[in-house]
Length: 291
Image (cartoon, rainbow, N blue to C red):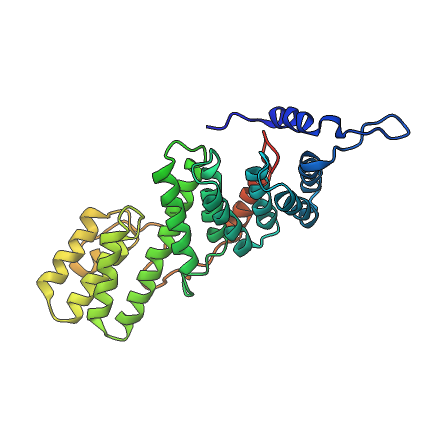
């Protein structure tokens, strides 16, 4: 999809600079001026971590040369500086602006991916608002639908799955809240939604188990037993299969995972945080082109 690499941009910058090059007293070439010069120097600032300085030059390029061939790259650069500063709201706004101004651009997948990633980095814990999680899901789904062959696809799919898992956990959390208050109709709706909308994420056993618990609490013994047996047969690797087995007198091998009696808080572990930090580091190093 992307054919222009670092050397391609270097040649383009030199060509655009033309006679704008000047020499210092020691004979070294100074950076070019004009639109190419602004872009060149912005990239130099970016590589040194001076994101605000880079953004200032890129914005000057866009203001002074709105029709420049470098304008799309400059817009992406502005968005990327915000992203690197972890100013994710601003980054998402700039990437959205890029999509509006340059629809169909060859790097639209990059913009879509970072819109999703910015929202992904803003996701809250399960017990809090999940609006950013929903935005991440929407952006990653849009990327995979519109540009299925994007090189960002593997990372987008992994993050999409994680974001959807977070939403499913939220539904379980709310369902369990209603269950404890004996508001069984509301609880049943949440657990059923997990089975219907979030299949394949490994949470079906828990949702189904609590549907069995609801039937049991209502005195629907045959329905409860049938539901417990479904947990055992359809999701034998779920930790909730052990508890379901106890309800129907079937011994199921215990596995080292969360149990209904000790539900996980679902807070990120130190390992998760370290993995995210490494991912952030890898994403900050783009090989092949500025920004």
